[in-house]
Amino acid sequence: MKKFLNFLKNPKIKMVSILAILIFIYSGICAFSYAQNVSTDIANSVFRLHVIANSDSKEDQDLKYKVRDNLLEYMNTICKDCTSKSEAISLVEENKEEFKKIAENTIKEEGYSYSVNINIGNFEFPTKNYGDISLPAGYYDALRVEIGEAKGQNWWCVMFPPLCFVDISSGVVPDESKEVMKDNLSEEEYALVSDDSSTEINFKFKLLEFFTNSGFITAKK
Image (tube, rainbow, N blue to C red; front, side, top):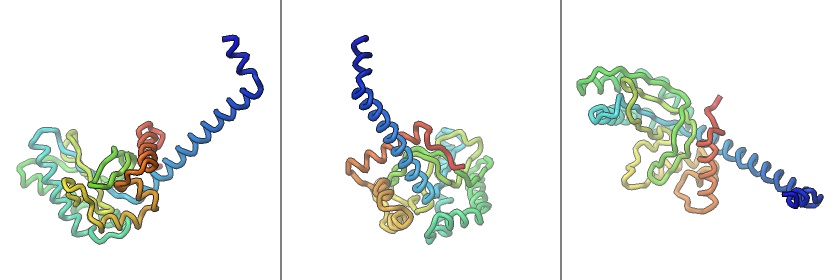
């Protein structure tokens, strides 16, 4: 131990150690700044739909999907031609009561009496794949539909750009949806969320997930 301490007292060694620590801190700050900026840019370009079932029972889960289907059908009639996130949110806000009415009517038609609570806000989402598009975990603006006690498994998709209608089994997002996403993201940000197998892009995507899952990147103020 004494030899090690004497080794550290060497001026050159001390200088190299200090430089290494400073470089490490600088690299960490740069990585965090990059992750925060990219995460914010992606979140600012996306508006999501979040439907939460009353419980995890098969009946409640089946009901959740029926509510989802009817909401998507209506959503497609009002949002399919949206060209920006703000436009999509504005349309949803204007038709918020209609979304609630559709959910309530679906529940009633299926023989249930669950209440429906609908909110437009900023919510936490895990990493999610939509065909060949992947959105990193983070906080996104969304229309949240809570059925009954809202204690069951939830379902989510992207209202803008329109990824809700993706056939997940095919693993392919329509070109039109990709074009809308390209128009709303930088070239690098689009590469991050699209099916890009490059080592650098995969590393950056993991970097986003790390800072988000570690709690460093939090909800918008």
